[in-house]
Image (tube, rainbow, N blue to C red; front, side, top):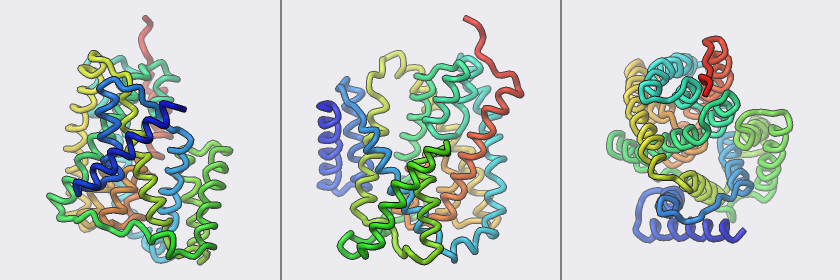
Length: 342
């Protein structure tokens, strides 16, 4: 508990410092930077797992509240770009697995290190199949860290986005009934999704329940801005504490491998962004965010602050995660991917 309190205090300090300096996304980058630097310096940080998971439910509610009848009516228009997502995932795998094998990783670790899925899912699948869990955790954490760090720079520098999109109304301006419904949707959706074993339960469960409420006309706004800023803080904290206990050997091998692979992913993401943009399937900002291979929660935050079409971006990321989670283990078995005996 003492470590968790100290970690939270450090995250708040980072957010306050970034806010004071006028730096972008202070509630995301401040905690992330402060916890990352402290972790690499050897500080005994500890994540607040239950609270962090609860914070992610806020993003699920935000996405669900954005699924209005108008957005749902546009889903057929998104089919062309969504159909490219499985192709994108397959190409990443075809390039990524040999990439990690050449770096000396065993077949199982190379396979799940290359898959652009959720960090926790890829680590769990990889460990179950006999892969190196620590290597997978650090490689995927580095992927998320670098993409979350670079994406705002690309959005502002290349696409001219101001990153000042409205997160939501202040709590004082929202109807109490709607906030109560959103809170209930967050908890019921999260726990209900966990009970049935749905992947990404903390985001997808609340998203589904809130979408039903939104389409039924019971909710007309996103969660309060204060709740979304709190979610950003815990996401930033969570990324930073992934590096607690990193050794020099891990820094030199696992993290450098993750950095190198991000360059490969950047090229592939840029190609697919250009395809959907030039073909008229997406606007530039939405195309970039839809194919940026970051974490679902992190991409939700960036879509919110960029003022992007949240439904479009999240539909593509959901498709990517579903393809990876359902396809990666099956494909691994079909291709006989096994860790060689010691």
